[in-house]
Image (tube, rainbow, N blue to C red; front, side):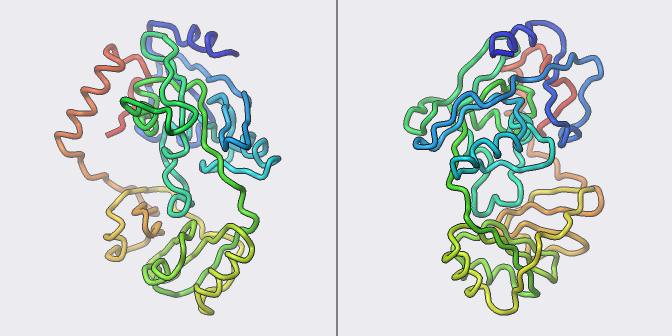
Length: 293
């Protein structure tokens, strides 16, 4: 399916929802059952390794994208949930465990082509940062849960693929550990044990492993993350957490084994979200039922 055909499928009337891999389908609440389901185009459109960018259909799985750019020694900083699509990951906006070192997922998106509530194909952003002027609609799309536009095709920033990837574990202070390391990719902490992810050139990873100290030993991977509850707090508040949790140090994302009641957004935030929704989707036909609050 090309982009024009996708826009025609979305159309101009009636509730509609974009479906990806359904790996984060419950985020934002259930979609209205009456909404018509559509799927974005899939496939690698172009890859320019020398420019560090790749153009890809939003319906492409992250796994397929990763395999394609890996052939040129590159990687895209998107979470690799099994079955997740590029458009779905961007619409949800969750960055995955490497956010500390790789940055938030929104920084990966350079250009987006999306279908508006009027069924028009709209371009936002540009293939390189210096070409972006005016409002940054790309950042607005990330985390919007498809409520202001249905992502069809994107241009993403790629980065060199790490030659080495190493997880370490130890009963050490994660905050002190972060201070003495250079940009670790992830630090996880459950109140007692710390897990550390280092990746990059072998010599750099070896040096950082030494800096982490002998109390940290190599392990196969991170701990199983609780999936019942997820909350975002100030990174500085992580050290004060109690109960059962696995926290992303330096990021402020906390995974809990029980449901978490989110703090209500500030009224000014809700009003801003309402105004944006009204501006982009006045009839409320895009992903009805979803809420980014």
